[in-house]
Image 1 (tube, one colour):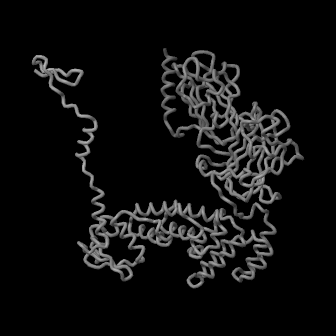
Image 2 (cartoon, one colour):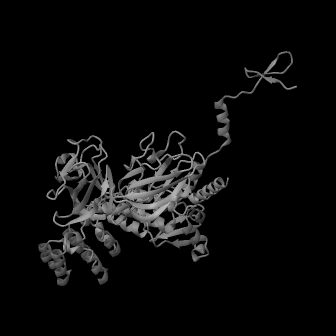
Length: 612
């Protein structure tokens, strides 16, 4: 008969109350036992293999680099590299040779690589840049992928004026895209110093053209021309005439002054007189926005700030715009404004430098339900203005998130054309940048944003203007699960009113999705209209003669939309139209059959109800 375990850890054996102790080991002793069960001598193995480096013991192959002989071991080389596996065991002549010549490396670089092959370690801090770059190329050649990635990370963090061009050339050759981008960004932001460096002269013609063709290579065109002249002189022995012509063509001669063209360029005797005359003619006849300017590129940094040299040149209360808190404003403080009339030229900002931008974020005064209309123009010289945003016929409110095609600008002018309350245009804050983080989330069509994300949200400054709900903007809060008989929906009385939503700004839309209240099997009829100004309405969806329920996927031809008006015409249960959720554009694939399946079920239920 087995004993009974007691609370004190002993066992009652049933022999008159005598107890036998239970083997209760402490956690520490259990951990020790487990540690003894696992043997890990990997570090001994690594050290033992490392001792074979340059050791002729057990060596079965000698690698010859520029006359210097390195004892090695075929199995070690083959196990570490596909290149050496194919070379030494792939049936090539080297498979049977006791000495194999390596022609692609210098002695010093190959010796460091061989040490890495045996040890898995490399101390980059003691190596010169040119050695590291050569090892980088060897790691690519011999297929040491992990080493190549580690070297790429190191090089990205150690780019400087003296090695930027060399790193760009190597990264370009070995298709290391991250290093290419890092090197180009560094060259852009240190253009003059890089143009004057020795490594600039080592660029291949193709790499040089890639550098100089960038709008973001921000330097005076005369300095770029002089750098090209230096490069041509340094490479005249091995350049072909075609390469010389292509490199010279990267210089933007119309950006140079007349004196620079007639003196420096002409005296160089590298550019024909016809090309110089063409540049002068373009410079004198083309409007400035047609010229291909260069500008600074500082991705995702607000350059409309005093710390970046920006300043407000026109407008009342100028100091507020570039440093203000978008929440702490009223009519008298925290905003920059101008009168809306033909004689007022608006609010103008000058950036610290010509800059490449694609994004403007502007916060309009929004302490009430007023709307504004406006347009935005940009310029390089304050004379030739290009309108990049035209919302003069659209109602806009609160934060404006505006996208344009990338271009070089220095002056930005915002001109208000309408305020639904008074005759002043108020801007609270302004951000201007090249936005690379969100640019994939939008397209631009006819000057308007085509969003891929839902803009009918409070975060994007949409509001419900008309409609009844316990929470004013519950229709736009993104919650399409937590609703019941009492809350979580917006409604209106049939035959009276509607549900009216205003988006923060005009968007080019071609779809919407909405969820009709469906806690029972009721069905609805409705129609949807849209507008850009609250005056002119267009019917885009007519379900007034259909019986529908639950999710509705709405598709229509693309059009600008600011206001969305949903009007219910029927409810099989009562006299109220209920909507739980609205999104625009629809956040499901347009070819999704989810809605269609739900619609078929709904129609079947309707048919059964009518029959019964």
